[in-house]
Every structure is written in C-alpha cells, then in structure tokens.
Image 1 (cartoon, one colour):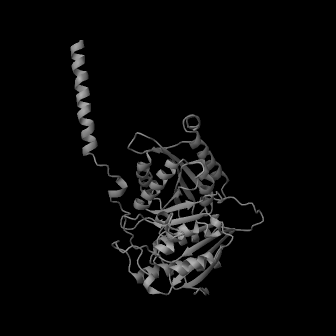
Image 2 (cartoon, helix red, strand yellow; image 1 turned 90 degrees about the vertical axis):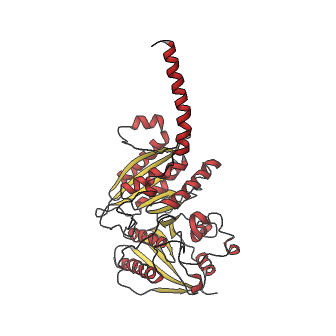
Image 3 (tube, helix red, strand yellow; image 1 turned 180 degrees about the vertical axis):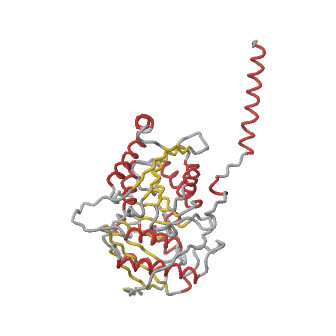
Length: 412
C-alpha cells in the first residue's frame, strides 16, 4: 500500500467517524430493558408478600463503600436464614465510572479473582471478603453471589434492576445517601441521592432504603440484651404491608422481638389512596382486607417461636400520628415503615420538621430517621412496593385467624 492510498483511507475513516458519531448520539434513544420489557411477572409483581416462606429468599444488596457492609450483613442476618428458606444474596458494589454511558455488571469468582480484585478494586475485595466471612459464620444457610457494577451513577439502575428481574428477586436494599456523610464528598452524596430517586421510580420489585447514619445496626454494646428488637409502624397500603411481611419473616428467628404499632385514623377525610393518579389500584375495601389479613397473620406468630406484640393506636388525623410516634420511643435495634400510606398528606406548616428527605423516605420514614425520634440514633428501613411509575396489582394474601388486640387510644 503506497502513501497516497494510506492517506485516502485515513481521511475516509476520519470523515466517517466525524459524521457517524454525532448521528448516533442524536438518533439513539436509550431505553432500559427493565422499563419497557414484558415478562410473566408484569401482571403480579414479585414482592416479599407473595414470596413463599418455605422457598429460597433472594435479596439484592447494593453498596457504595465498606461503611455499608456492617449494616447490610446485619439486615440480611435478621431476615432469618433457615433450611426451609435459605437466603441468596446478590452483593453489588457500585463504582462510579466517568466517560461511559452503559452499565458494566460483572459477576466475581472471588477465589479465582482474589489477586485481580486486590490490585484493581481493593475496596471491592474488602467488601466481598466481609460478606464471605459473614456467610461462613451465619446461623443459617446463606449464599453470597458477588457482583461489581462499574458505571456512571445515572445508568447504574439499569443493570441492578435487570439482574433482579432475571433472577426473580423480590427485595432490593440500597443504602441511604447520608449513611456515610463523613466519608462522601458533596457531589458523590448528591449523585447517590439522585440514584436512589431513580430506584424508587423504576424498581421492578420491593425496594428497601436503609437509613443507618451512625452505623448502629449490627452493633450491640450490651451483651446481656436477650433479643434484637424491631419496631414496625403501620398505617395501611402496599408499602406498609411489605414492611410487615418482612417483620413476619424476622419474627420466626430466635432471639427476636417484633413490635407492631398500627395507627387507625378515625377522621375519614384524612384517609385516601396512596396516589390517586395510579390506575389499577385496589379499592378501599380490598385494601383493608389485605391489611387485615396480613395483620392477622402477624398476630398468629405469637403462638410460634417468635416473640411478637402489637398495639392499635386510635388517632383523628395525621398530626396525631406524629404526636403518637413521639411517645413510642423505645430501645429499638431497627425500625421499619412503608414510604407511602393510606392517609392524607400533612400541610406544609406541619411538615416543617420533616421536609428534608420526605420525597425519598416518606413522611413517617423522614420523621423516624430524624432527631424527633430516639435522637435520630435508631436505624430505619423504609420499604416501597414497586416503583412510582409501575402499577401495583393485587397480591394474593390469606390472613390467619384473629386474636385479641391490645388497644391504646391517643386523642388530643
């Protein structure tokens, strides 16, 4: 090949690249598969409620740093791994990659790639070793499948949700963006907050946001404490039912105490649908039937292994709900609540103390994680049943027989 031919070829390549590259950016519209694909689970979304407790329970845990490990492993452990229902945990380390537009999700064979991880991704190596040690020392059968997701924050969601859909995972857990506020730079915390918002909009199953600002979950300085105490705050709706369904699973574990606080709003003008703009949601009677069925099932756990207690708190409106919660402070190791509820929103002046993270954690989740409740020292798990842009369809739940209820009246 002479110099003239080579020059012509190089000029042709440059011209072709300069034309095609901007055309691709202009014409290509990225549509994540998880957002527009149809699957056999579209009609009934996979959730904690419709996952049988005698089968494998699968969880996707996303971590940004080593500081998230202790809280995540503690949360996985109290989900009660037993022989009848072993846990399969997909551990995904999220790493920011600048300059790329597509997510890269790689499974890791830890034993074979130990040296590669130590050199190229030392933090990932430490995280996976911690989960491997946890699985080996768990009180029940736990399988850990490690992944690394190297991508820009704006596209991390796609690979995680696709994995959850492919593996039929009912529960995804992500850390709150303020959990490691001391270690994260401002732009990183902002990016994680936006990522969490995208998760909430498009997640194909149940999502849990773990608020553990002071790394208290999994740490107990009082070795004489006989049990791990979980509190559940329940008003009604799919999100609260997911928190309660997880609490039922936890209550079957030894050395567990689960307390359910159910708020009954007597003023009907404050009770409404979670989002009136959604189509296909259940009517009020069906929602109440599903709530009652799951609560009855929780009550029946009193006669099993778990140590459970429940209380009904009668209030007139949302303001009294807030006042009642302030009076329910206790020695909790974890608190769980749904993001959205069957109750009217508080007015702006009444939300003044909780407005900071209400869009991500919901009204009660924001309050429970603030200094208004237990000085903000109790870890909080906020559950959400499906994304904001998905339709929640009927979940097949059959409640157990009812038993007597302790009732606490809270009135102004």
